[in-house]
Length: 151
Image (cartoon, rainbow, N blue to C red; front, side, top):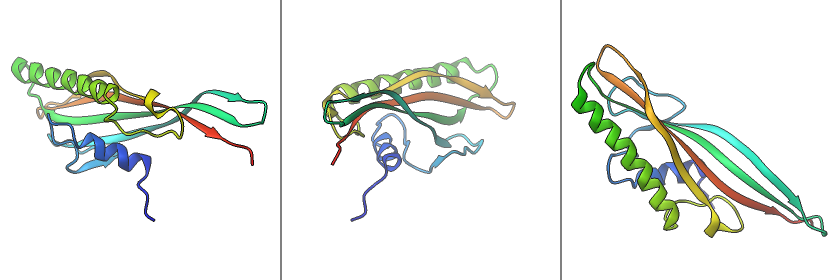
């Protein structure tokens, strides 16, 4: 049985965002400086807490971290495109929040999946160049729990 990785499931879900074709040609850990390029950069797994019950079973609260990088057309001094791009970032962040709240986002843990959260935060213009390309970044995080039972 071929099971999708957590990264693949996240990329597939991001592709359902209606405001931009995030799925097409999304790279991992690399970004072209061409408008329309996008990249998902895993930032690793953070263990938030670990609790052990009297039987030795362990429940771990974890967090995945990612950066979503998007290259867009942004000419120097073009306030209209800057406002459009900023609106897109805000809309995307609200979409992620809505998807998480309504349980349409992927889950990663093996317990308490209804309590899992995916967040999109700190969306901002990261860099611009003289060729009219702006690089935006949105920090994505997913909080989930895993339970490991002693056999």
